Image 1 (cartoon, helix red, strand yellow):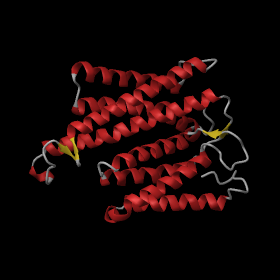
Image 2 (cartoon, helix red, strand yellow; image 1 turned 90 degrees about the vertical axis):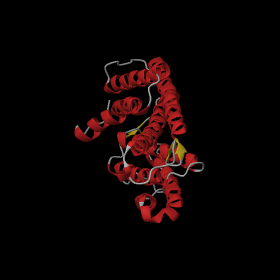
Image 3 (cartoon, one colour; image 1 turned 180 degrees about the vertical axis):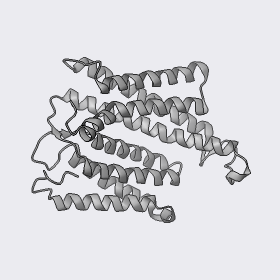
Length: 276
């Protein structure tokens, strides 16, 4: 992760060791033939991932005060929160296939954080911290919604497919969860994410001295907000379900991803300079 600016209390070798061990644990959780140990490996990787996030984003143990808010740390924090949601849900409905994909995603974002840690920036006010927390919270809730929507689409495809698709789940069941329950859970995450995103945008407008409406982050975030609002209204008023509804969710999630992480990726990686 941040190997060049670590303080004496956090030697570069120690941070690198945390990265390697977290990657190994996530790799063990992603291997399909180690299901007996994959749950424990995911929890271990998630815990070390959290420690690395404290170093990366919060700057714990660093000489420079502030936070790293680049695209890679934000993606890393988002995946970490989605894994946390999954870990709670997994206590009630075991989903080993999801565990493998989330473990793979965890390893990828840790590597991204190691290569693109972002620059340390000072925190100007508590409102900035709250705005950032709300934004990442919205990312995580919509990320959890996307994971459930993918499960929902996969279950519907299996139910509609012929015998060549293999054994089907029991009627109304999706990977151990009733289809209607999975659908309700998906849109519960969408509604929660929409509320948090609305609060983040409102706080940004209310507390930013000079609000730039044509900023890339603002434009894509507003577009995502409109898509999610249309999705919730369409579901409420017209009963949108199935693939028609999940397509709207995917579009909104991509727009939201482009809003913060995408714009910073362009500045930090493609243009080689900090995002404004």
